Amino acid sequence: MATDLTERVQEIAEARGIPESEILEQALERGVEDLWIDLVLSRYVNDEIDRETAIELVGRDRVKRAERELQAVEDDVRWGLSA
Amino acid sequence: MIVAVADTGPLIHLDEIDALQLLSAVDGLLIPQTVYEELEAGTVPSALNHLEYELVEAEETESIVDLDPGETASLAVASERSAVFLTDDLAARDAAEDVNVEVHGSIGVIVLAYTRGELTKSKASKLMRALQTETSLFITDAVVERGITLLDESTR
Image (cartoon, rainbow over all chains, first blue to last red; front, side, top):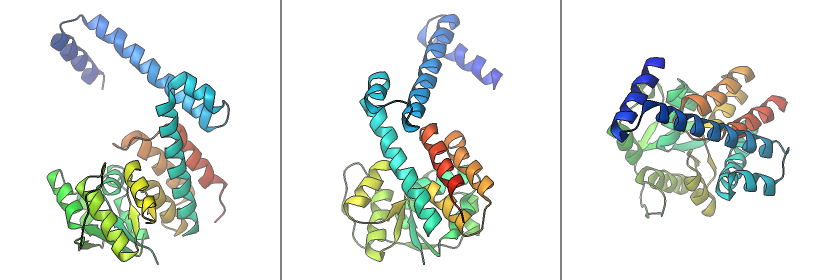
């Protein structure tokens, strides 16, 4: 895994013609952003924050997608338990 | 009696967590020829050889915006035979609901297998989590955790 990451960072840096340190900085930013989105959606799904706050933090599309997923998963679990 | 028509998604996602055999929890499994051909374009899961299923052709398929040919064929067969449509695609779920076809996904199959005694609750929870972390299925982790909580709260 560590080797894969190192090789990928090298390949991306070469392809884009920018230093590996900059690729790592971008990767960190993206990673933190993804984790932040996961946290906000988790808080919304668990009723710890309201819908408007979630939309403000991660955008309407992501909130709507999570809502649709939630509806599907709850429906699936209920079906599986009652079938 | 549950007869289900599988789209490519659940076949691939359940295979990715070594759980394709859970599809035997349904009483009759149908796989449209178009779906099988989509699998052949990649790799047909070897575990499919150990499953009982019927390869079927959709009588008539109308192209539906946002759905691929496999999803379209599966929905058509489910509609023709009053079967459950199994898909992990949200647009396909919406299309099925629009035409009053019952639709569920890989998570539903895992929970059904638990209800029918093929899995422990703990194993079912692990597989649900694995669907999110180990497969190509995109699903928000908090949503899967909510599904696991629902399962945990159930009494069978």
